[in-house]
Image 1 (tube, rainbow, N blue to C red):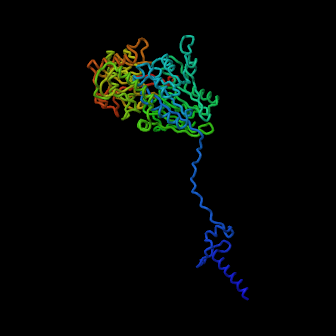
Image 2 (cartoon, one colour):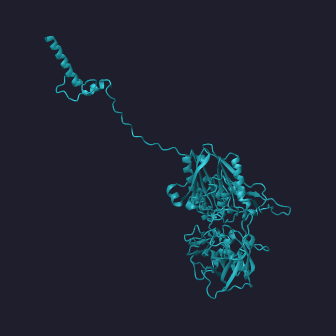
Length: 614
């Protein structure tokens, strides 16, 4: 019986041992009080046994970082742009810096730098004193790919414009609506049935093409103003027609992105042209297929700098103010070779100076240009205790404009013309006065800036009735800025800002207490008028007394030296010459002056129409 008991004891010991080590890999819930030296630990046993009872818990997954979504677009194309720099060349080192920053981000072939014109003249002497020849090397160094000529770029003459264009290397002058003239059998400029000159050979290329890094073909076309000074030497077709022909040609050549660059002009009412046959807003409405349009001519900031999108065509239009105040940037997001989205912004002076380093090569050329000008400042004529105002509305702190309001510089120039011409009355179109004069010394160079567009002085006789007509014509576009508004000397008048409407749709202006030489104006009397009177206002039977920038500057300089000039602050004075009124004072002498409705013009836009006294 001892043998079975021994076996039973061994079996019992074995069961106890199994109860300690666990059975089937599962640990016992009751710990053993005494563990043999050869026994495995629970963790070791668990590791050694096959996984049969249950699956171990899954390892926790690493926290997932969400991936950035892929952009909807597959390429970015950037247009860096300026317009109406007018010789204010300090902006150009920043133009290069801005363009280079985008090239570093998107690649050289995905950035284009363009100018919408008015670069060779019309602002300060650093450009026009040297026949514009200071400008091409600076623009070339700044990296401009193309420019469209503005109206002031023709001021130096058609031949000189061709010379300046020839000074460029990589920069191209592009203009789709500029042609050589065609003469008819009488030797006159031939015109078509719409009044536009018949186009001959093109003066510049009408379009140009680029290709992005992704192989997208980008087409660009340029436009200048239609009409006006262009017709003196060249033929200019309609802007809309030229734009449509350019878009069609570029698309036919496989361009799927179209950029327009035009010195066309922007107006807040989107309708009224500014010395052109259309506005940029009207043009992009009439010509579908333009993705973005870089505008110029009117010195505008559109949509607080973000531009305007045409609701009919989706074209984005923007303009970069004027005189180097900012750099414009249009960003085009491309998908499958087409524009998916676009945006515009202006980089203003504070941001340029804080975020960008001016390009040193361009800056060196700019510094050399200013140093050259400093050496050519010319004769010292006077010292002014006041700032002499030639601001346009967009530049003016209080919104007053030399094209809508009497200013102290306007008075000085009109006084000088009257004095020089020994006339009863002096008149000077405000738009022809191109630059303000800072407080301090007035040198010949400052006056050259004032006459950057030149001056064509005529002295001729007019009746009092004709003077009234000229006064009314000066008011015709108010409160909008106007090329018809004149600064005056030797005369004064009040007026009611709101014109009446005649039975035939004509405007009737109320002129109050007009005076000439301190005496009431006599409609039947003959007066002598000294006026900068170019174009249709010029007398047909005489040549100008002088013509050009430097003669105009010299005339004002001589007037300042004569001791007869009076300078005063640019504020409304009791004896102002052009006086807006809310009502006619009792006992005042009142003339109603009728202006005929403006007829639709051809290349030059609407004509001013005639005026009749009644």
